[in-house]
Image (cartoon, rainbow, N blue to C red; front, side, top):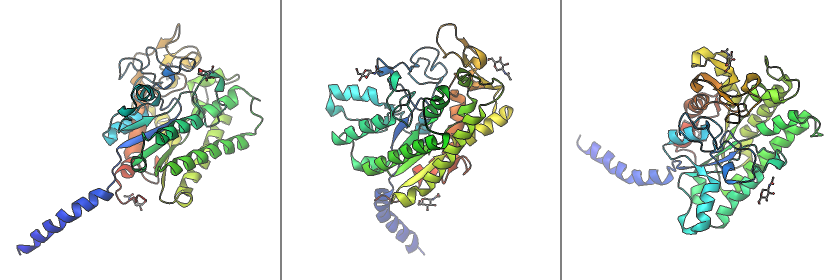
Length: 363
Ligand SMILES: *[C@@H]1O[C@H](CO)[C@@H](O)[C@H](O)[C@H]1NC(C)=O
Ligand SMILES: *[C@@H]1O[C@H](CO)[C@@H](O)[C@H](O)[C@H]1NC(C)=O
Ligand SMILES: *[C@@H]1O[C@H](CO)[C@@H](O)[C@H](O)[C@H]1NC(C)=O
């Protein structure tokens, strides 16, 4: 009777190092995309006109403007906290340190390349000095070439992409600027997502989370588009968004077949936000139509913080912080849904599982 526990202990001792060798728990995240995740990259680009590095941005959490386009943390920040690592620093900040002292290396928690205003198409907002997704990838690649990043770390990292909203918004803001039909335009966007994923896979990335487009047709900033109603979402924009999301989810379902050993996850931003917007009181929102901070109709005509802006008393009661972006509270709720939610929110597994699932094999 006494020998059994000893045997188990004996096996345990021998299996432990084996298990931890294959248990490649996620320790870093690499983030790409637009203002939804931008932690302040644009503020380092002096001639970039899309900025949020002034008050009252950041006022609910950081208590100073960080360059983030909300009153506090973004989804990327919340997920980092759930994983138990530090916020990913802006690439532009780390790059400047590296330029001075290359031995410094990059932070173990990963990096954030996201640039507000950028889209999946290289030309989206190109006159504003934003960093397109294609250039964000080049920045990542250059770190590998210069040996600041290694395949072993990349294989154990998460990759996030949130983009597309600026492409869709530009399509409607500048009617006729794109000669493409809505369907062809969406195909062009999805082609860029495929290109992005192929590159990340080639560099060694194996866990890729693609965030769907949010309810862009319903944002307060829609009043910038001529003919938009303040009472309802822009139907055409909304249907384009949903069409893109359907294509994105289909692509994610093909990732394991297209990229051997890779796991793709689809984060349903649209459906998750809709749940909050359809039932505001249940989730503690008093206002899901107007921006907390801004000016003009829906507070959507003027960017928060610019001359003569107005601000609500309690940003936590507002779904939208400014003309384009959710409040920190909204980002927090969305993040919780992606971290631990069900398949309607995040598919085919939530991020907690993605991070902890030790049976995911590493090549
Ligand atoms: C901003 O400055 C960079 C570097 O000086 C330059 O390459 C880029 O073309 C400029 N962009 C705009 C929109 O002026
Ligand atoms: C939402 O907030 C705006 C101003 O911040 C206000 O004019 C509007 O009436 C509010 N809507 C609701 C439903 O409370
Ligand atoms: C962990 O990942 C494997 C391989 O992708 C999958 O088959 C399994 O269902 C996952 N486990 C959970 C709990 O989701």
